[in-house]
Length: 328
Ligand code: PBG
Image 1 (spheres, helix red, strand yellow):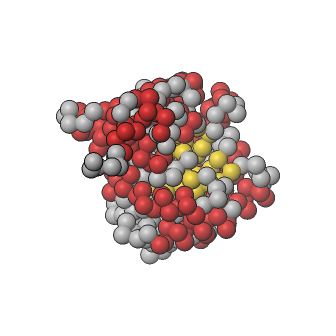
Image 2: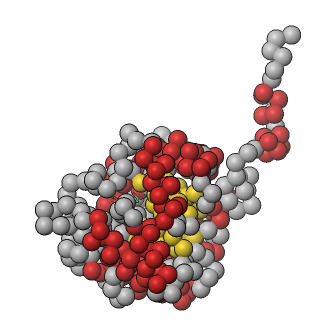
Image 3: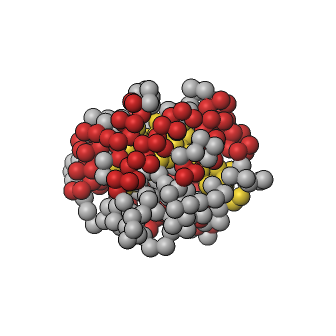
């Protein structure tokens, strides 16, 4: 009478599979990252991210409304400025592209969605690093913190519900919390990119924001070989007042995500980054992968590993597939 144990029994019909399915992905779990380019007359396609564009202020607003109507959980905004300088001053300027776009989105959308802003200098510096440089050309942690504090206040005043420090400077969450509180923005939350690796999977993002970086970010972002320091980074960010933490990239770091999810008492986000997007789109373009199934499997896996929310460039499309569907 062998085999006496038959796990296949519960896989026999779609109804049985639906009954015992553990992990859900719903539109509200997905956050759409969006790019807005200063002075653009038309949306500009990002070659290495087919289907993703640098928006004009106008198309950004329209695309944001569409995303909210599709039921996504929130929007994460990145600015691409027309001019850059050594200190990234465009990030601190209330008339800088990111802050202008935030104001316009908040005016359009109010509190109907969650507006998040990437809080980092790399899009605004002419050298492309996430902070300001010292005389020797090294990223100056504490000088950068002063800029981050100011940037957070401007983003809060421009309408961000959550600011997302992504520069991996030591002490960034604490400095930002203090700056926000001092300026009367104690209600503005911090979504900390806590465990952020120096990853090759950010490749296409460099095109998306026209990064001028030469070299790499290994003196501030984490070594892909390391697990323990992610635990430490999360612990520090929580002690400094992070309202939510993030692991980035997502799929290559599911072990880290699971561990963070097990330890964290705050919501955990994961960022399915530009390279994760580009890989699947490239394989799909060659008919090597089934697009919808692959994307939904990746998102399900990220949720299964413990993410409450997933930042994904497929947020709107996936939300439509998921609306009322089997994964919800
Ligand atoms: C930094 C930032 C980066 C990404 C999000 N925020 C680039 C980097 O750290 O090098 C990458 C996102 C992606 O690849 O999709 N502002």
